[in-house]
Image (spheres, rainbow, N blue to C red):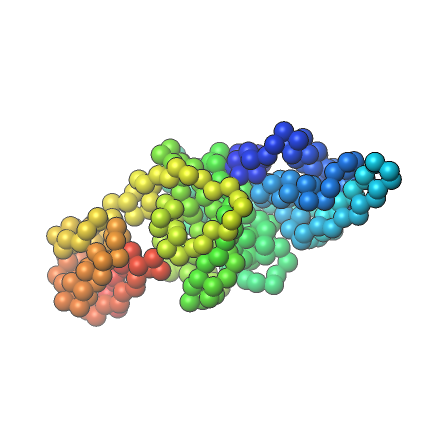
Length: 336
C-alpha cells in the first residue's frame, strides 16, 4: 500500500484544513466525480486539494486541474468542486493496480539488490533513468502512471514516480516546483524531489540525471550529478518557486560523489590520481567532484591541458574526451 509520509502537504495545514484534507482523501478514494462542500470557498478547497496531491503521487488521474460552481442561498454556501480527470474514472481501479504492481516490482528488485537503504534509493533512481524516456505530449506524461507503467514522462512524472517509490520504502520524500535551465530545454518550469536521510535532507533531480531522453537503456543514459545535493549546490542550476514547503536542515555525507569517495575539497594531482585509478579498475572512465568551481578548473587545466590524465595508472595513452557538469563542479574523463 502507498502511504503519506512527505510532510510537505498535510504537515503544513491548519486544523480546519486538515479536516478538509481527510474529507478530500475520502472523496478521491470513493471515486466521486463531483465533490460537494458546505460553507467553504473554492480557494480554500483548492489549496487543500493541492496539498493532497503533493502527498499522494499515486492519485495519477487527478493531474488536469479543477473547476467549481458556488451556490449561495442566504447565509448558506454550497460549493461543487469538479476535478478534471486525466482518464475515465471507470478505468482508474485497474490502472491503480497496474501502478501498484509495477512499483512493488521495482521495490522488490531494489531490496534484492542491497539491504542498505541508501543503495536501494540509488537503485530506484537508476532504474527510472534506465527504463523511462523523456517524452512530452503523451497521455499521463505528467504523472507516476505515465512514468512507471507507460515509461514515458516529463519532469513532473519522474518526480511523482520517484516519490511513489520512496514512500513505499519508507523514505520521506516530497516534490519541489521551480525553474531550471539546460542546453536541451532552455529555461523552463521544472519539478524535482527532496528526500530525508539520516543526517538531513537532500535534493534529487531524476530527470536531469537522464541525459539521453529517448531510447534510453544503458549506462550512457545515467548520471548522478543531481543525486543527493544540498541547497547551496542545487541553487547553482535551479530556482525554487515561492509558496511551498522546502526543508531546511541539509545533510552532506550522502552526496553521491562524497559517498563514493570521489570528492575533493581542493585539487591535488596525487589525490585525484588515486581516486581515478581506483575507478579505472572497473570502469573505462572516472569522475572527480570538487567543492568549488575554481578547483574543478584547476583539475581541468592540469589533467587535460597539461596531459597528466595519461599518467594515471590504468588510463592508457589514447586520446581522451571529458565533460564538465552543469554545476561546474564535476569532471568526467575517459579515453576516446
